[in-house]
Amino acid sequence: MTRPVLVPILGDQLSRSLSSLDGLTPENTRILMMEVWDEATYVKHHKQKIVLIFAAMRHFAEELRAEGWQVDYVRLDDPANTGSFTGEVARAVERHAPSEVRVTESGEWRVAQAMCEWEGRFPCPVSILADTRFIATHADFRAFADGRKHLTMEYFYREMRRKTGLLMEGDKPTSGVWNLDAENREPPKEGLKAPPTPKFTPDAITQEVIALVGARFPDHFGDLEPFGWPVTRAEALEAAEAFFARRLALFGPYQDAMLHREDDLYHSMLSTSLNIGLLTPLELCQRAEAEYRAGRAPLNSVEGFIRQIIGWREYVRGFYWHQMPGLAEANELKAHRPLPDFFWTGETDMRCLADCIRTTREDAHAHHIQRLMVLGNFCLIAGIDPRAVADWYLAVYADAFEWVELPNVAGMVLYADGGRLATKPYAASGNYINKMSNYCGGCRYKVAQKTGPNACPFNPLYWHFMDANRLALESNHRIGRIYATWDRMGAAKQREYLESAEKFLDSLVPAREGWARHTEGREPC
Ligand code: FAD
Ligand code: DLZ
Ligand code: SF4
Image 1: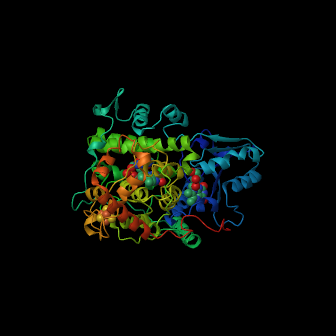
Image 2: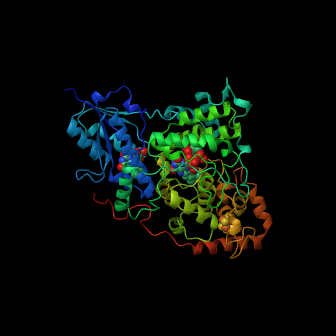
Image 3: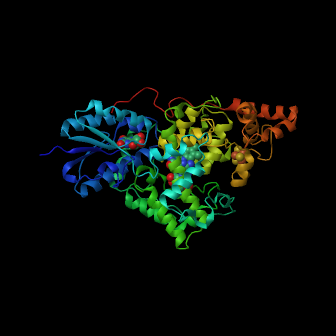
């Protein structure tokens, strides 16, 4: 018998188009999938994220077996489970004496580092292949980034449009305009109600995983049930079709809107399926373009959706690999305040934050503007430590993988990278939230009040942040003129702002240790 090729498939590699399977047949291949403690706990992921990954992995393994592939599937509770990728690949190498270990590159730096050691460790060659599900290669991003000080997404996005041919007429963008973002900033209308996102009833496989996660990860953040995320490609395709048929047309205009307890609005809710590989970015964008070409969705919505995927999503992935490992430690604004406890409990009188944390707890999801302009903006202007913020985002969202989470947190939200990703910090006072949401009406704080105990905390925090970071920000042409307004206020008004902010910051209770990461080291299986 010939020695098989051993193909480890990780929990975010659940795609039949995976590069490591390319050219192989079931006869000469042994696939390895492994539920491991290290991955389930490197941060204390939201319970629904662990259910999503394990359930999707188990379904994918079943689908592969049904096609005739031989799959070694190591369950979390397998007594011999070593708890790590490297340990499980080592065991599989012993079992099968493969001619080669062939794996698609990891999405995260941490795992990529571990994979680099496999070659020296195993008695057979190890091939680490490019992840061809992404549109931009690492070389594409390097070619874009080399020699640029600011890595403005817009120029990268145009290259991706040219590379894919999406919304292009020859070498020109459809309608002559690359980016229709200016048309996509409608505040929410009173009573706006989007068609619901499909939720999928857990089958027996998923129910078994739900029970496992409930038993093994009881102290992780978030509600375990109801669980309704797509866990198979068929379910993900159904969710995508529902989005294209019922929500894409209004995706653009209401992309930045926020409504109390209207959690999904017109967003696609497809990031989990994309990030674990049930859907590919190109197929979704081509499908969205077809809606435009058929006259069923306007260009501003379709271009906006495609930009999020071949623009932002591809860009942050390139940015991550270009900037790591330094990005994980970056703290340009020297922010050191601990994350407030209410990020975990949701217990705050700030109605906007309470609602965003509620949806995060209930669904392991919050939409982009909630993540950026409410949760992220608060962390920025309150000066929260970037490591603590990144740990929180990585733990609480079902779609969170470091390659996409960290550039958004350190770059887009916190300006911790010194402005390589965003040209200015997205700092905003309560005014922005009031304009784009219905949160403020029901809040105990008054958004129009600038200082004092009843003032919206975003108002004094905004000026406190500007004042504290003047040295770093004043020379930025997109933000510098704000200091003229600050200077015009006069010393007494400035003092009021700063004192209000300090009082508020002093009232914050730091999060207890152990919410995001296990404090007592690795737990036994
Ligand atoms: P839609 O609004 O329908 O957008 C369509 C798709 O575009 C998304 O599914 C996603 O794949 C992509 N996309 C949109 N914005 C971004 C972006 N800024 N970066 C990368 N891709 C984007 N997204 C993640 O997938 N994982 C994360 O861990 C993550 N962390 C974030 C942290 C912060 C601080 C911020 C501001 C954003 C983060 N995002 C992350 C981006 C974005 O918030 C989510 O992709 C989006 O909310 C997912 O919901 P959706 O599928 O309904 O997105
Ligand atoms: C996120 C995650 C979790 C919770 N558990 C597993 C697991 O047990 N097995 C697995 O193969 N993958 C898991 N993942 C996804 C990995 O963390 C992800 O594949 C790596 O971080 C590389 O991006
Ligand atoms: Fe949030 Fe301020 Fe509005 Fe309250 S008043 S909901 S704290 S922005």
